[in-house]
Length: 281
Image 1: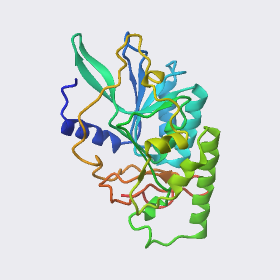
Image 2: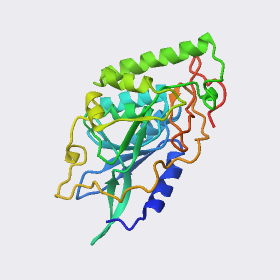
Image 3: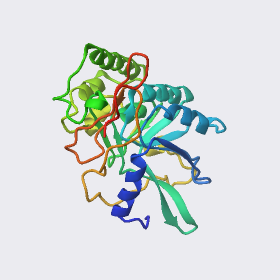
Image 4: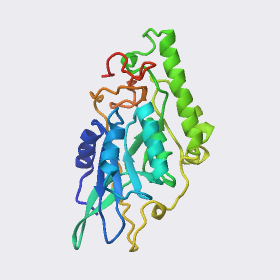
């Protein structure tokens, strides 16, 4: 097993999750084909960053391993459509290195989070696997510049139009990707001042987020040792200590990067796609 203690493991990925989404190619030949690590928050630059990452790579049929707290609604929808067109597969996890007789080898640890708009990126996979140890959590989208105290904030008719417009876009995307209405229902029932709702094993099935219970369907191995690792249980309930400072320029759905009782989300855009207000902090 990896010589990585749980506190060190959590601290390492905490910093990455606070940053804009980063894509990494993980090569593991000859044991497996390799996979794409996608860690962080979806921003207005994420689609461009992925296009640059994918430009010189043959990624058709490759698996994306997600560890993300959400981000921009419209950019996540655009990215998810890219992934489905490419025939990508999706799962939840974090890439670590295990000590083997021949040296360090990459593996996927299932103790990871896919929250808010990350859940809809997970839905983009042609085949989707969620390990038992992973946390898949949902909530409503909201105006991020009023997320510190959403019940005390004021809202205009234009604000309502923005949110309803993006809920419509999200609904169409969900059905286009093969998701069920239950996914929207569970998400839209959770306001930003309540804890995120963690999907149960049954809900992962009824929402159509999971299409297989076989890890080898998304991380196939040429040899018997499929690279899905297992780590000791986490010693804390959540790994998030502060809100992302990167501005998310369009309608967004991002859960708290703090303790579970936090209520911060990301921001929504104006009708022309420009940013409205300041980012949630």
